[in-house]
Length: 146
Image (cartoon, rainbow, N blue to C red; front, top):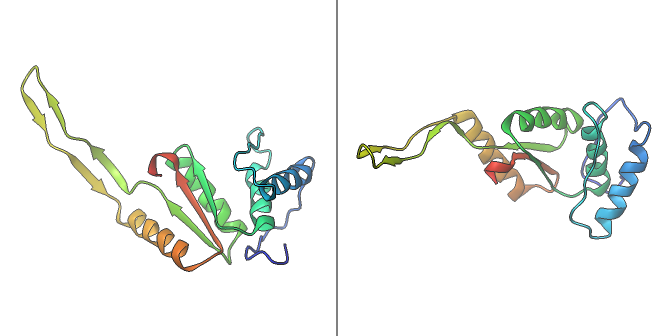
């Protein structure tokens, strides 16, 4: 990790199978493999394992979550693991979104309506800025936003 711009801050060290998983994932990434899966039950340390992989690889990283709730949790955890690096949050800025619709049976048109969360919009802009200006960037995003 000496050349890595990522400074992992943790009082923990890899336990059990984590060290082996970290080594295999790092080796695979360096071999050019673009698709890998890290399996583990809830609470098994997958996030910590990936934090170690990120620190070892030293490249800007995109972490995709299947929903905003898990993305927020991962964002918080990675902010704690990497307090000196740019950990950013990129999810949909809509608090509410109603697409336009037409109901032919009643000849009713429903206009599009939405509500934007200004704080999340600011965080999205921060993520874009970090990607353009830094190399030590981790972006946590929801799949639906990408």
